[in-house]
Image 1 (tube, protein in one colour):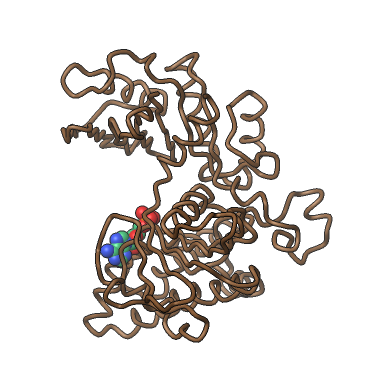
Image 2 (tube, rainbow, N blue to C red; image 1 turned 90 degrees about the vertical axis):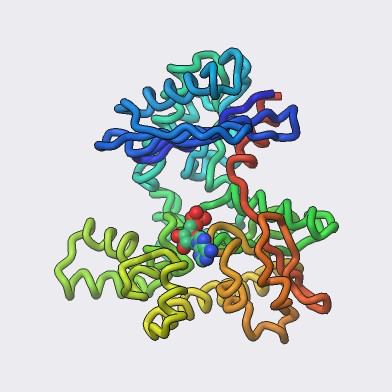
Length: 400
Ligand code: AMP
């Protein structure tokens, strides 16, 4: 069964084409980027390793999906004989509010819910919907499945998702914690249980998705109990450019102090803060900040310490929320690749039963692996996330 996975963003459409019957083989993947901007380009890689790159004439997501489908059929580098081999299309959608709690076949009602959530996810939901509608036009009759970043967190109890605000803000305005990166947290918690050899049902897991954006989730028996992102992805960890948790009064204080508008404040907290703001070297990429630290930059050292300490605090908080802990999982760009950051996060947690094996931690590998010491009560795993495969698997289940 061939499944196409689409992740449509503000100026890009990413795709992965899977043959699920051939052991979830990736037939082709790539992206069209800078859509609607000068220098629009496409990258297409097939399973033989052929890579086609170059400028393309694409003005909108519909053109992008059309071009992707043409490349999939291409006589030289294509991977399909006919487009009707594609049995379903899985879409990453960021926000499903309270109404969507599972992956779902897209209908006009589902599209209405995606629209209702535009105000809570203005940077993602409109583009995710454009991607779905482009597929409906270019590949008519093929079912579209929405896999929502918020869905995995739908099992959080009210004590975790309610804010200490007047209750009417929740009942009338849907202001609550939703959480994001759900597809990744779901995927890596399942993979960690498989690596551990114990049933997911029996495990208390804290998953740390540390990428450019970052979030931590508390997972018990495979169900999310709490997560660090909130109504929007701004809450929680110190991220690449997002502040994460701050005293809400700080926001009011700096708005008054600097005379900032709502838009400027939004930009400050989402785009100029986090590692970018703290490290002060003009980069939000942890690799650059780690390199500057290694050369003796004290401000970078401190920024990395703040980043690690915030993750450590959430692990401790979630161990308490779960009533104990069996596995800590690291995933995404930073979590999978930075041995130094992993070591920093769990430093000093031996007395809580969380003990790293420095040698295992230093090994680089694309495979899921255990990096805790043999006598560590809590296992520490590094599990590469694969949101595309998770979306394809959910899609397959729904259309089978
Ligand atoms: P993601 O959002 O999961 O794609 O993660 C992207 C981020 O991962 C980048 O911005 C980097 O900060 C970080 N990253 C990727 N590779 C490394 C590495 N080898 N060491 C440290 N950080 C890394």
